[in-house]
Image (spheres, one colour):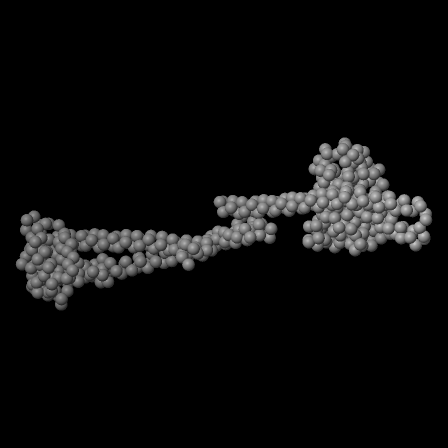
Length: 485
């Protein structure tokens, strides 16, 4: 896997941590380089001050050929400071006009009257450089063959030069202080990393974990069309920046997808029920005509009275069967138009009276709340039929001493009829086909009551929905007032 293909859960902390480490390393390197340059400048300044002072005092000693006093003068530098002080030179010596050592602080390695050419290649190069020196100021000589760096000062006054003062500094003169400053800088860098890396890991995870979860949810949304997903919890990323806006957009998209899926299901159910209704009505019309003819033929045979009792008994059985078929066909031919009388409170009281005996037989409790709005209401017969069908189903589905409630009131510019009863929830597979004919969860039921209720509500321009929650089955019918006739 390529680095850029990693999950944001790892990519953000890793790349952020790498950026922090590189930044701290770059700043530390710049600080160390600056410290090194400062140390070089400090050594040069210290050397200039020391060499300038010594060259002036040594002139009189060399003029009077007082070598001992000259030695005392240059050796006094080490008595004034610590020998391991990195600012002090490793050795101080004076070179005469012909290249011999007049006096030095290290007589073992730099003996008096020794020729510089004889002390090694580094000193030989220094001797040649001193021969070429013509200025009155200090000069720095750094030879690859030498183990020290040399800073030379001419010992002269006016136009007379008696020799050259040489300060020999070790190449490692900067290391003690540089190491100390490098250690100090490294500790500060580690402290910065110890603070910034956990913050980077926290914020990287704070941003990456919700992003990873969002990506996984989006992948599942594509497969399930948002039906099995839930909104992202606001505690996951409670901020209002671009990432927070992305999560809000995801929640809005999920709600829109659910609403769209719900509308599609309702439309599909409406189309399916409408197709079933048209088919049932067509079949009912086709069955109704021959059914009426058969009933008329039976009535004609009965009026003759010539058939034996066994035949008359058979005719009675056929008539009862045909009338039952006629009742079912009549239920499939739902007609609500043309019923012009609007609903009144007395109509609802009639329904309450009709259903009262059945409620008492099962010792059930009926909660009746009716508040009819002012104005023209939907047709009385249709509303009575809807309420009777729903109440009969509720009484049959509710156990003894159970609870049934009825609410009729104005809602959203229409009339709402709500019937709820205590009962086990309706299975989802049956709930999707609840308003189709001949779909019943009760033994011996035809399922035509809810079918008729659905057809009436649709013909009046309304709707009916069923839902189950908290041990209660609830049917809600809404009929628009403006479409009442």
